[in-house]
Amino acid sequence: MNHHPPSRRAFLGASGALATVLTLGLPDLAQAQSPIDQLRILCSGPAGSIPDIVARRIAEQLTSHYPRGVVVDNRPGAAGQIAVTALKSAPADGATVLLAQGAIATVYPYLYAKLAYDPFVDLQPVSLAAEMTLGLAVGPAVPDSVITIRDLAEWMRRNPKAANVGSPGTGTLPHLLEEMLFREGNVPWQHVVYAGGPPAMVDLLGGQIAALVLPEGLLRQHRASGRLRVLATSGAQRSTYLPDVATLVEQGYPDLVVREWFSFFMSGRVAAATVDGASQALRRAIARPELAAAFAESGMVAASSTPATLAARIATEQRYWAPVIRATGVRAE
Image 1 (cartoon, rainbow, N blue to C red):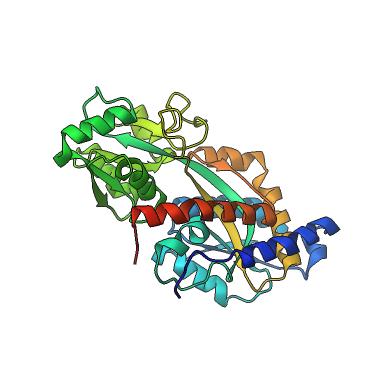
Image 2: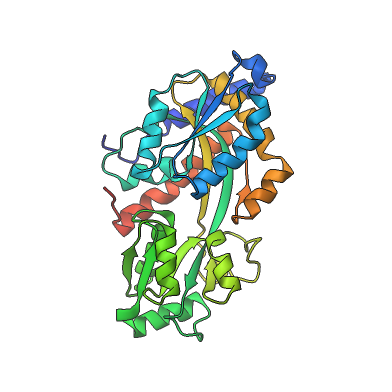
């Protein structure tokens, strides 16, 4: 399926229907639809991954809402396409929901020439789940005198053969942030692609690569031990978890605000009232303080939303990422 900068008809249509539902003031999920005995959460990441942590922590908070509990069904691979395909084939009864990175709706339509799904038809936003800030870290290959992004850029210009920057995969948000930061600044660099964050971290700590962008929660432990230095974070404001690290905005990059976020989706075939009922249940679960504490361990912030608010955020980020991906020329297969 070829994707061009698409009409937002599907998301905006869903938002309008959902806004009508919200205006009517639907009661609890059990009254809004036939009771669901068990909820299945399809997860786009493998066991132990950040999406898996999000899915399982929220599932724990939802268990009492469903008589037979909540099951997390990991369907990793192909940039979320396997999980979305499973969602598409599931019955449209509200018993199946997808937990995935927001990029499946905001970035991948522009990054991939072909997708196994149409995010503007096959996915209905339900609720945000969690957010995290990215951090740019340097390891022992970079001298201690480098303490800002400007310092790093100057060092890379003087040492182009050593300017190796890793990422957890082509087209991931860390990679796109690196492209915006270095390519547009005319800084010489070599992109080193890894199959996820852990192997990239090993090479950063071992001095095989100079720098790396990853979610800050994955950087904190090694920063505390002094094995790496975090030069910047990617939020609009300083991170709750790394308050002493300046943002990219503070360091002169006002347009570089990037947050990784995860959200719940339902099939495009599910009725709007069912989507809204599920969103209500999820928002109650995500608001619980014990979930916030659990997410903090991984450097995440719990976040929820109505379907309409999430649809609006997706549309906003589509407008952000489409020109970025065109400008950088990044493509994924």
